[in-house]
Image (tube, rainbow, N blue to C red; front, side):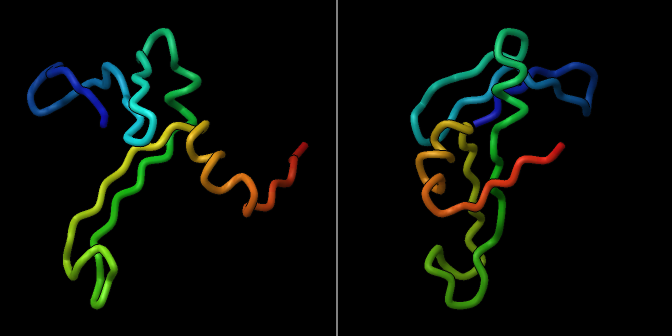
Length: 80
Protein backbone atom coordinates (compact mmCIF):
# COMPACT_ATOMS: atom_id res chain seq x y z
CA UNK A 1 0.00 0.00 0.00
CA UNK A 2 1.45 3.35 -1.02
CA UNK A 3 0.49 6.37 1.08
CA UNK A 4 0.32 9.77 -0.62
CA UNK A 5 -0.16 13.36 0.44
CA UNK A 6 -1.72 16.04 -1.73
CA UNK A 7 0.88 18.46 -3.09
CA UNK A 8 -1.00 20.47 -5.68
CA UNK A 9 -4.13 19.13 -7.21
CA UNK A 10 -4.08 16.76 -9.03
CA UNK A 11 -0.54 15.82 -7.91
CA UNK A 12 0.36 13.53 -5.02
CA UNK A 13 3.65 12.81 -3.27
CA UNK A 14 4.62 9.46 -1.75
CA UNK A 15 4.94 9.55 2.05
CA UNK A 16 5.53 5.85 2.74
CA UNK A 17 5.10 2.38 1.27
CA UNK A 18 3.82 -0.63 3.23
CA UNK A 19 4.50 -4.22 2.21
CA UNK A 20 1.25 -6.11 1.66
CA UNK A 21 2.97 -9.35 2.74
CA UNK A 22 4.91 -8.62 5.94
CA UNK A 23 3.17 -5.35 6.84
CA UNK A 24 6.38 -3.36 7.34
CA UNK A 25 6.03 0.31 6.44
CA UNK A 26 8.93 2.17 4.85
CA UNK A 27 9.31 5.95 5.16
CA UNK A 28 10.13 7.96 2.02
CA UNK A 29 13.01 9.84 3.68
CA UNK A 30 14.55 7.24 5.98
CA UNK A 31 14.02 4.21 3.73
CA UNK A 32 14.44 5.68 0.24
CA UNK A 33 16.61 2.80 -1.03
CA UNK A 34 14.18 0.18 0.31
CA UNK A 35 11.29 1.93 -1.45
CA UNK A 36 13.23 1.91 -4.72
CA UNK A 37 13.43 -1.89 -4.47
CA UNK A 38 9.68 -2.44 -3.92
CA UNK A 39 7.79 -4.51 -6.47
CA UNK A 40 4.41 -3.08 -7.45
CA UNK A 41 2.16 -5.64 -9.11
CA UNK A 42 -0.88 -4.31 -10.95
CA UNK A 43 -2.95 -6.23 -13.48
CA UNK A 44 -6.45 -7.18 -14.51
CA UNK A 45 -7.41 -10.85 -14.50
CA UNK A 46 -8.10 -12.17 -17.96
CA UNK A 47 -10.48 -14.80 -19.26
CA UNK A 48 -10.46 -17.87 -16.96
CA UNK A 49 -7.98 -16.18 -14.59
CA UNK A 50 -7.64 -17.77 -11.13
CA UNK A 51 -8.16 -14.22 -9.81
CA UNK A 52 -11.46 -13.82 -11.69
CA UNK A 53 -12.34 -12.43 -15.09
CA UNK A 54 -11.74 -8.67 -15.14
CA UNK A 55 -10.65 -8.57 -11.49
CA UNK A 56 -8.28 -5.73 -10.64
CA UNK A 57 -5.28 -7.18 -8.73
CA UNK A 58 -2.79 -4.99 -6.84
CA UNK A 59 0.07 -5.83 -4.49
CA UNK A 60 3.11 -3.96 -3.14
CA UNK A 61 5.90 -6.29 -2.01
CA UNK A 62 9.19 -5.35 -0.33
CA UNK A 63 12.41 -6.81 -1.71
CA UNK A 64 12.83 -9.05 1.33
CA UNK A 65 9.44 -10.76 0.90
CA UNK A 66 9.96 -10.99 -2.87
CA UNK A 67 13.29 -12.71 -2.27
CA UNK A 68 11.59 -15.22 0.07
CA UNK A 69 8.98 -15.96 -2.64
CA UNK A 70 11.20 -16.32 -5.70
CA UNK A 71 14.79 -16.50 -4.39
CA UNK A 72 15.04 -20.24 -4.97
CA UNK A 73 13.58 -20.02 -8.49
CA UNK A 74 15.04 -16.92 -10.11
CA UNK A 75 18.29 -16.67 -12.00
CA UNK A 76 20.52 -13.83 -10.80
CA UNK A 77 23.36 -12.49 -12.88
CA UNK A 78 25.61 -9.71 -11.67
CA UNK A 79 26.27 -6.94 -14.16
CA UNK A 80 29.37 -4.80 -14.20
